[in-house]
Length: 325
Image 1 (cartoon, rainbow, N blue to C red):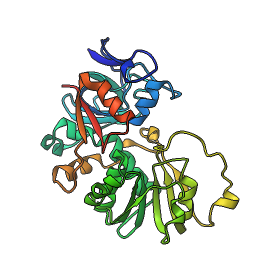
Image 2 (spheres, rainbow, N blue to C red; image 1 turned 180 degrees about the vertical axis):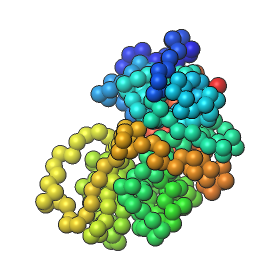
Image 3 (cartoon, rainbow, N blue to C red; image 1 turned 90 degrees about the vertical axis):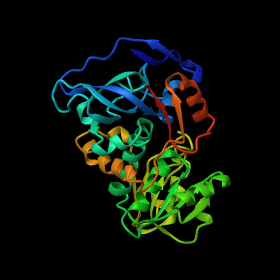
Image 4 (cartoon, one colour; image 1 turned 120 degrees about the vertical axis):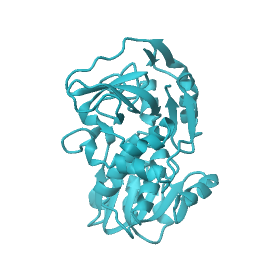
């Protein structure tokens, strides 16, 4: 089969298409015929050698059809999504014509998947599964929740805006680029703020919940913008991976404020089963055009270097996906 391989650590040119042996599944695993996959920042860090775990074939998510499932959990030909569970980190990932995934990290896309193209479906799994978990499990949002999403123009942020608006939350989002303000308002953000490491100094009203996608560089600032009982969920690292240099909760964290973290690598574990995420319902909402989850740009398999170059240059205005067939 054809696969995109990290030939060496470095820039986008280090991703090379090669012929490799197809994966063979065992009981408890599924071999998926990959139709398309999303591009994620984690894969950029793996390509550069900046991630602790990585495999020669990268890719932490995909959509496709079941090619083989020895345990019988899925019928052959079933449209499915797979994400995390070691994909691209401890087992070869989705940058290939076929990939092998744990059953616990594979879910059916449901009948509504037939109404969407593979590139549309590929924009959903990682972004929407993670956004849903952060919003409805960690932040416990509902109708009327005053929610701030820091990093709203990212694929993750856009997914969170869509899901939060469907739940009836009042959304404020941030962006570093003034030119992207209209995009966020078109998605349903009631207010859009220009991102600032000290944003709390410019905001007067407190929020019920904050989804923190910038990361360590702004999370302490976010804690200053929720009221008593308010929640902050750290789930991204758009601002880089540098650790917080100084954080003293006794001095910098208000009483009664909740801080949590969610990393999508937890999907498939007993505490975070992927089946807990209503991906079939989300696919149905997209098919019903209740909101748009279309990718910002679609690349062909042999354009993987261009896709990574666009990601590294921060050119994307949403999710980028690669079609395999």
